[in-house]
Length: 447
Image (cartoon, rainbow, N blue to C red; front, top):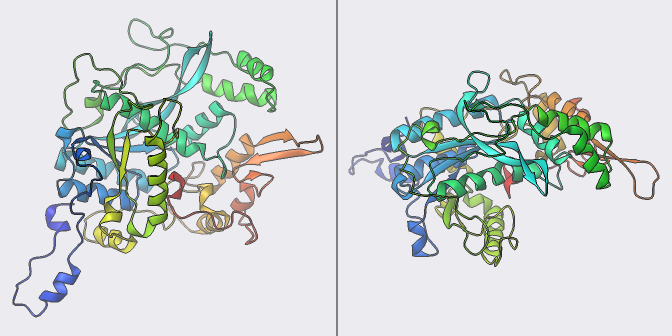
């Protein structure tokens, strides 16, 4: 178990000849958080749990050292993308169980979803979220998805693949859903309110069909002079029409084994934009060897804090968020995180470089080919843990449009315009001369 005994130094006789060696081996601690403003210590703290070792180590150490307090409104959030390695889901589920039972901290899993709602006199699909349980949806309708469904829904909603130039998967599968959740959590509500219209909800609470017509979606797209084929637009709209048109009311208490504070009387969503944005502390698991990423997040947050209207801020950065990096501030590097998990009785069981979305395009073509060649007995075919799934997904959703000037066709895939297709990577082909051969460091997609 991850307990105080595991993350504290072993007791050594002060007179032992090995005492100095024992001191040098003593595990690092986070220590106190160096708050930039003393008032920040009173704000609710939100731990961003990615499913990797660094953010998990931060979560356990912060809980053990008393840096997290459920009474203050602190929570841990894991935003599922439906494209993680099977071992990541097992690890995240075990972390959730231990954090909630041993420290009494709510640890929520959430997912991107879409719902139908009215806007400017018509019904549209819009982004929303839902709480999920750490159980596969195949075993429980309230469980999580793990076969790429959320990517399918995302591309069907926005009409294009995420790519190296526009990482909409990070924004829409992780950041925006967590902002919606925090709006309701920080507002003191009893849980996520009903999302979407009520037309299809019967007296017994069940849902029927939706109000968004795929043909009308295609007609609207044509009026807006969209360049995608009518057939592809209708196909995407038809896919979304198979999804529930609304997400019913949910309650925090049903998705955590930790105690949940009582809802405030008349509680409403807290604003996340503008000068009155709800203040909160965000704890991120960036290390001392990731200083560039820390600086980038701080720069973005300082820009967002200066927002004077709800429209004048970085959309991926709520103005009320105050980011802190306890691992970085305490001098933790990758080796320190590995040492932490070596002292624990469980660990993340996935191949090297298979973290986050297993075959994320941000990892670079060379690493993706190497990862695809590596034997992994836990890889599931026809899911995002298999490189063939990504190749097939790109082939299905690749966007073809006339080149500027009308000469030829441009192909928009995961690596941008007319770049190497994922099918080449699945076949083991990636040249060192590729523009995206090296990719970015692991987990860098969230910056």
